[in-house]
Every structure is written in structure tokens, then in C-alpha cells.
Image (tube, rainbow, N blue to C red; front, side, top):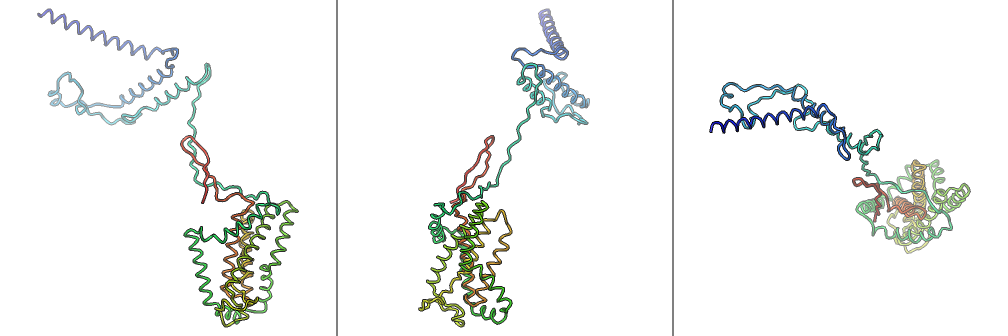
Length: 399
């Protein structure tokens, strides 16, 4: 029995010694001898990376110091415990660890990139590390469709067809109003009503306290900009100049001014005939002289045609040349305002007449330019979009 146990112990000791010796020799061989890359196997960079990682981990371990447990706690523990109790060993904080516990060393990722470069590079070529492409920026701003006029000609069929189309757009505009449009329209109507209540006081104050000989001369000149003859000759001269110098924008401006003049005249004359308001120089003491039975020229005050013409022309020109001459509105709108005030100065209109005529002219001019037959559909816009690795354009149609 004793000999049997002795032989068994000797056999176990021999097996343990052989395993320890084999492990030591294989570790020494792996550290001293480079392993050639087999066909289809991992390249040498992989083993070099592993040795680098192992060196870093050993450097981290070398910076740690361990305090032995006290004699009383050591006496209570077995000589060869099955596993090490983490509370029994108190590691000191390293001064400068290379990596945080549980964090993969950065050399590992460099090794992986080096391996990928070796595998993708042709034979004999130096490996190239490919940088990741930058993430595309998310575009949020809409791109503007080209604002340049096209196919501008007085013989353009679309231009003549746009007359009834834009007339219907103007008449049916309230049907398409949103909340903001109704707010603006309500403000115009309320201001017109308040001015009607003060029309007599406004005209009396202007005639008695403001009107002078010099002001009469100046406003008589400004009144010319609202005359129908001035608008017609301005349209003909502007179109001829644009045709002569080959400017599509100048021709477009002239044709759109002509269209706004026709549409404005049709709307204002219809309102004049419907309301039949007497002019201040005929009924100075009656500001509420609407629906007069006498259908003569004197009963056509509401609204002002001169104010409508001046503001429609100013609105068209400002919007057509908004990119080339952005300050043009600062010149044309004051001129149109002086034209409207000239009608009050000459007692041909009440204050409410010129205010409503100015609002209608501004509205009609913007509508004509917005629905210009010489430009792209402004209800359609393009926007860049990105979705991961995909880039494209988004088409937005505004109803």
C-alpha cells in the first residue's frame, strides 16, 4: 500500500514538471523567434502586436506593489488556496498606468489596422492606412431655385394666358388665405374703416395746416408717377430698352408692370363703380357719400387709382430687381407714397381711398411677380438630404 502511494505521487510530480518545462520553452520560443506568415495565415505584424500588448501589460504590472496580509489573517488562510481572495491582496495605485483596467490597449487597434493594411496591399507594396471618410454634414437650408427669367418675349403665349390666370388668383386669394394672411387682410380692413371715420378731419387739417404753394408744386410732380399715361409709356420704353441691350430681366419687368397695371385698373374700376363715393372737392362736408345716384366722374373716389398704379409698379420693380438692386424698394415705395399723398393734397381723394388703393397695388404687384410665367414654379424647392452613407436631393412642393 505504501509503495503504491509513493509511485502515484512520483508520477504526478513528473507530469507537473514536464508541463511547466514545456510552457517555459514555448514562451521563450514565441518571444525570441519571429513566426513567419503562412499562406492565408496572419502576418508577422499580428505577433509583433501581441508582444507589444504583452510588454505593455507587464509594464503596468511592474508599476503595482502589493502588501502582504497580516500574520493573523495569513494564519486563517490555507497554504494553497483554490483561488486568490481579492480582499487579501491590497494593490497600490500605480503612478502612471498605460491603460485603465478593463480597457483595451491602443496598440491592439493599431495592430489590427496594420494587419488590414498588409492584407489589402499588393505584394511588395508598402501598406497604406486608410482613413475613414468624414461624416457628411447635415444640410438644413433649402436651396433656392434659379431666379433668372426665361423665354421672355411679348409673343410668349404663356404670358398672355397668365392674364386671366392671375386675375383669378387675385379674386380667389381669400379662399387660399392662411392665418397670417387673414391677420394682414383684417388689419388693412380695420385701418381703412378707422380712416373713414377720420377722413374729414384729415382733409381739413391737411388743407388748413399742411398745404403750401411749394408742397403743391412738389406733389404735382410726384402725382405723375400714378398717371396711366406715365405707366404705359414707361412700359413701352422699358421693354424697348431691354430688347435693345438684350436684358431678359428688363423685358420681364416691363411686361409684369403692364400686367399689374391692367389687373389693378380692372379691380379699382370695379370697386369705384360698386361704391360710387363722391370726391372731397365735390362733397367736402360729407365723408360718407357712398352709393351716389349720380354716375358721373365725380362719384369714383373709392379706392384711388393713382395710388394703386404707383404701388403696383413699385412692388413689381422691387421684387423683380430684388437681387440686383436690393435697395430699390427704399426709393420706389416713398415715391409711391408721395403719389398717394398728392391725391389727398389736391382733394381728389380721402385718406381711406389712398390707403386702400396703396394696399391693393402692393398686393397685386406681389401676386403678379409670384406667378410670373417667365420664372420657375416657386412652390417647388430643393433641399439636400443625407441618410447614413446615402446623399441626395429632396423635392418639396408647397401647396
